[in-house]
Image (tube, rainbow, N blue to C red):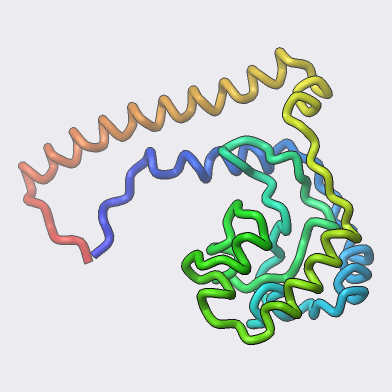
Length: 185
């Protein structure tokens, strides 16, 4: 049975939104198709495991430790993925995750052509030539004061979420005392 959701349980999602709201986005569809075709990666198939592709995954995560990783949303950083692989991979390096034993990684699921897929993705990585931009470079590009103020807002919102969780706990207990608590389904 799933536990009751916590307001504070959404801080990682909130941090990801803060990153996605500011990083450059340039996903040229023609360039994406060119890269996939060049390395024999089917657009409708997960590049990692071969299942039906339902998502475009950031090959290199754009969020790391709740901050910008230095990689951006661009055609050379997108590959088709199934939901299972996209969620399992998360912010891990694609190759470490893919060939490792993480829950739902292609290796842990016994994907038969995993080495062939990894070779294609290594060539895709070389073609993409992705080099992360340091957070210091991002900060200096917009100015330290603006950058720091932006991230301070995230901390303020997380503080408000913690306060709201305390209030929610008090209200929930009061309502349960008055009306009884019903089991979760």
